[in-house]
Image (cartoon, rainbow, N blue to C red):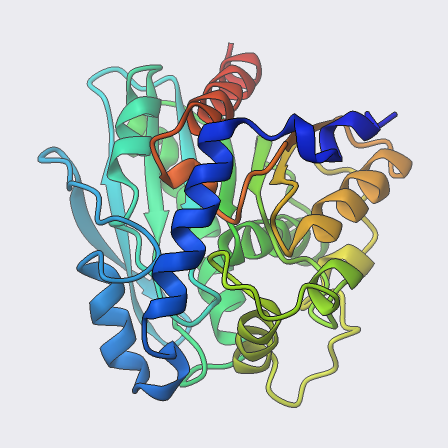
Length: 313
């Protein structure tokens, strides 16, 4: 049973409320991102001139290149000396921007627990619409299954991502199950994903408030990915898929995220499919709030740490 008190205004901590106001003020003053060429916006985001601060790169992270369905796929590997498990991470960015090297501090945090991260790149939309991104993520997952023991000395695998990356992580698990008869992951960390590309009510009713994302942004991101493909296809909208047989899942979402319904609906569907589900709801959390240094961020990251320890240990 979900506690209704989590959604009340008084449940929002002052520092969370202040961050939200600061984000809205900052993004409202910036030019419309959709008025610039996509490459310009991608570069600005990488330099920290978008909604998220630029995070430092780890000196022990390295890149490798693997074969993909339409050319090479870049993987960023950050591994401790002794590896207990490997986390296949898929980055966010609305399927339109983002890259695997934007979250090294979170991967370093996992390395302290003995968890190596393999962060996958994938072809971005709209230049490469569906099925390019899920095809690349599927290829990265199959590569990891083949190589994990030899490279890392373990076959204990996790998968996850944030926003568009959470969507692609869920699609990847379903593809491995349905196309290859494989269920290799010990758990899945899905943070603030978009799981219905026809858009859930919380997205449709959000309006124009620019708290990281608004309804227009998500609509355009989804159009970039989907093109003319049927959005009722479970390979695009995994909320509509048969979810039976998936590993334990941590579903995390803030109550001030336009994608709130996506996570709430997914948690309910996972539960009815008898998938072990841990639903983490954060009062006042905006989209990707864990990227900002407030107490709510640490609370969410700690819960992810605990989930990994339970799955790996």
